[in-house]
Image (tube, rainbow, N blue to C red):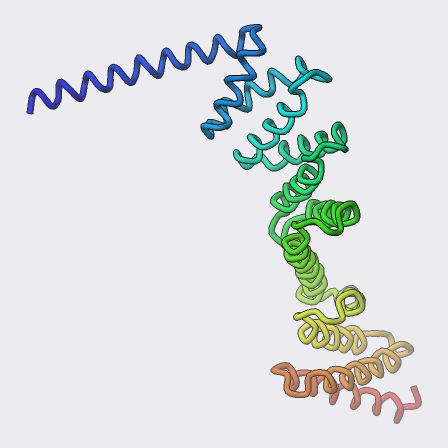
Length: 273
């Protein structure tokens, strides 16, 4: 037992010394001026998947080798290292720069694809700001324009569907949010815009119903001079909803809005308003 403990201590001490020596050598390499040695070590670290060390060395090398031999390789390996570390913002920036600097490189197509794909990975959940989602869509579309026959097209199409569905979900939730906060005019307009922009949306049934409900609430609380016109729109919206979703779970509620709208219109007509 004592022997095992002694051996374990020896191993730990040996590993610690080795690690410290390795760190010391690495620090000297980073701070030193032997750029050929740095390049060789950076590629070795990359191949060993020690990306954080490779990144620091490639950052050292980029400016020194700018416009020289190995500049393209350094730029490429640097971007790949950043991508492996899931630093999508920096990797995307690096791949875009690579494409601009080496547009005739055999890696140019892959660089432009990876730049777009990094934007895809940066896209946040639907309930957050969707600026990056829109940028990802634009980046993918630009890639397709440049390389319409790329092997990446099927994957890009799948990602584009995902990104567009995210935007659609965001637009629906915004419009529905107006309804929840009883801002019925804004809800009606936003839901109508949503249906115009996404006629085949999986949220179409809900959007049509909440547009109908918003239209009724907005109409019934309008000035009498506007009430009849707005309630008639509710009747028209119900007819379209009933035609499209005659077995909807919202149908009884929609029917109730329709009945109340018709009754209010009849009352206005009987009073000559």
